Structures are given as C-alpha cells and as structure tokens.
Length: 266
Image (cartoon, rainbow, N blue to C red; front, side):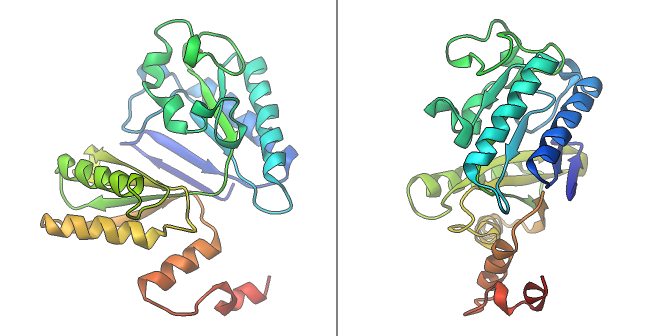
C-alpha cells in the first residue's frame, strides 16, 4: 500500500496499492473480504456517490504491463468477487461490456439505495453475479483505466450553493470545449469542518493539470469574496503530472522531470 485517505464527510476510504498482477488480485480480494465483513450499507451515509461497501476497484497500468493485461486482471478479480462473495459486479472504462457503462457515473446513478429496491434487470443487469444487490455490501464496480488525479479544493465558507455553481461551471467548460478537459466535478458539504469542497477527478491529466483546476476554483471563489482553505490530493499521482502542474503554476519554461536530480538516480 502506498497511500490511504479517509474522512467522515465523504464517509469513504481510498486505498492505493501497487504490485504485480498476482499480488494485486490477492490484495484486492482480501480487501473486499474485510469490507464485506465490516461495512453494512443499510446504515451507511456519506456525501460521495457509491453503490456498495467496495464501490469501485480501478486497475491502472503503471510499468511493464499493458492496458489489456489490466482488463484481463479486472475480469479475473470481478469473477472472484461475484463467485466468492455473491456480489453483483459491473465492469467500467476499458473493461466495460457496453458503451453506457464506460462512464462510472452512469453505473453509480441512484446509488446503493436504488440497487436494493428490486431485481437488477434491463440497464441495471450486472455483468457478473446475482441479479439482486448484496443486502449489506451492495454491488461492486471494477475496470481497467488510465491514470487520473483525484483533486479537491476546499472553500473557506459554508455556502454549498457556491461550490455547486463552481462545479457546474467546470462541467460546462469541459462540455463546451472551453477548458477543463476531462475534469469531473461535484460539490461536497464538509459538515464536520463547516466548509464546502469542489471535488474533482482529472481524467486527462495531460490536458488539464492540478494547477488548472486550483486556479479555476480560486478565481471563481474570489469573485464571490471567498478564500481557499486548502487543496487536497487523494491517492497517488505520477511524477510528470506533478512536474507539469508545478511548472505551469510558476510559468517555468522548459521544465520537465529530467531537471529533477532524483530522476537520474532511479
């Protein structure tokens, strides 16, 4: 494991680990087993969308592995989850068996509460496993995808409507081709801290950097007379994405990872 993130408002844990395919398979299944043991979705509430105790398992190629290898691994893990734990499994992104399931948000729509209302049929039919949600663990989504950056910006205000407006503007800019390429955004009310958050997934980090998102949110917040409390990275990030973001924030021309001493020492 290289990183973990937990907070009471999202009521969600993000565990990041790397390894060879066999280690990933064993670790993922061990994690699913523990989550099924400890988490009861019938009493679970949180600000982040989710369909189950193990909401989503992304498999990302890092080194000496292809995207197809990750697709194959996701299918293997998904089959084991369905067979061993009797949990409905949906495949997304590169592992999707239908185009409408490539987008994670489409599968999550309605959340666990919608899944447990009855039989999972028509567009809700799982790719593997039973056609009813697991009573306490719901369903699981798994798939191979490219790297993304989970990046959040907290606003020093409790004005949830402001965070909603900024997130909506990010999505409009993305959809209209006016910037924010590949950025998914939503507003989150951080009740325990009395502030709000613009939560994003940067799915095309080669086109949109963390600084792009931070600067966008800061600019809109400042127009409303609100300061930034902090920004937050969830999970891990690639070195070149960090370098690109840092260089952009300082308008540092000609800077890349080869200018970092540690890069030469690997």
